[in-house]
Image (cartoon, rainbow, N blue to C red; front, side):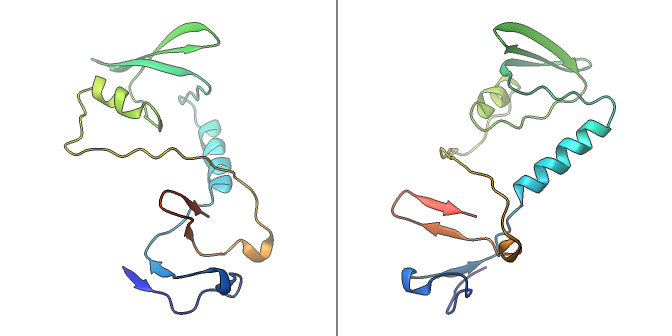
Length: 140
């Protein structure tokens, strides 16, 4: 669903907005979600969280997967019945090692983000994408 938005929310300065559309997008509070996810992982036995590692190879094995990675200049390997590929950069390289090749071209956009806690009066704000030009946008 996309339709022109005739009047935006009061907290946006309508004098600075050329046009607006309402879409069916939803946003996720990543600060709260990250806290929840880390808590859930920490409470479960049998789940290993390995941060700040550079994954170099993945292979399918009879028991699941074997993942090679480097961390702190040291080479490591872990075998697991299940792994989750949460990468942004390098995701396709690992997928291709397992034979998962998309049938369409894939677009990666380089993104930077800043996660902040919002003041109470903005915590229930709807999702917004603000286009700043041909190649830039800001998403809340």
